Length: 334
Image 1 (cartoon, rainbow, N blue to C red):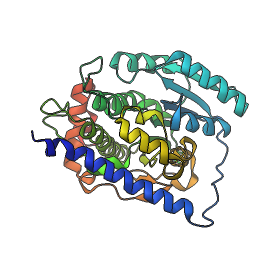
Image 2 (image 1 turned 90 degrees about the vertical axis):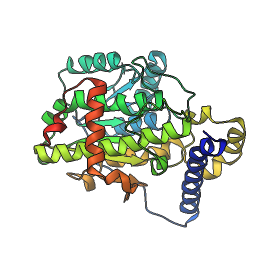
Image 3 (image 1 turned 180 degrees about the vertical axis):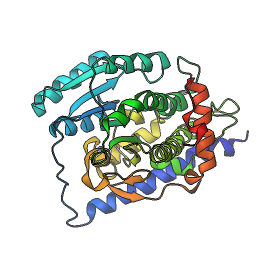
């Protein structure tokens, strides 16, 4: 593969990032703007947030806890998770915040997490698929999957499917259960290689990351199709947090780190700002019963054209079921 073809995924990704950052800057500079939304209390409702110990996930957990939700923070670092729980309890005065171990790079760990959650015999009203890695060097998960695809996408695919029955039982006609999945603008330059989802032929961290984010959009739309066909009171939406100043950028090259350090205050959202669309998708009355949409800055936005390809959605779902060794309910096309 030529040097140019190897560089193209990175170039496309950085162009997308620059465009989003400039849009965020213009939005910040615009005078006035809409007031911060005020959401209804969520007392009695239960949420799970993956990657909730830091960054966008942490502020998502904190805001949901402030609204009175029982929030379960799912993460792979016990000490980090427990410290996050302690701080959130202290700041929100909500004692119903807890940590459960869940390593999304391990199918075994995901299944153990679901068993622990089910043992609580509580409902589940909101699932926020937030955790992820970005631009990591080529490496595999415990189950042998390329890490971006395995953790960002397959981990959340399996987790959602294992929790789906609980979500269905918890949703009602007047108040649907909600699945919120965090993608990013990089999905616009993603290419889904169904014959090489593990990037074995040629690995590019930028291409692998973008593919995982596109897969999450396709998954969300397929999930909503299945829930609608099944008559289930569950909605699935995908959110784009924007360009956010988080630890995800630790794997970028040193030059990019320098530029980020110099410009983050101007172009990047804070993690709290980045969490706003996830929170909106989780609790806004405006989205009651609404699913299968892509949200950016709390607004419905068109995702990339290929994400609406229903045949591609179906094929990815079927292949994902094989990889995670679960029953393919989608093959019956309810």
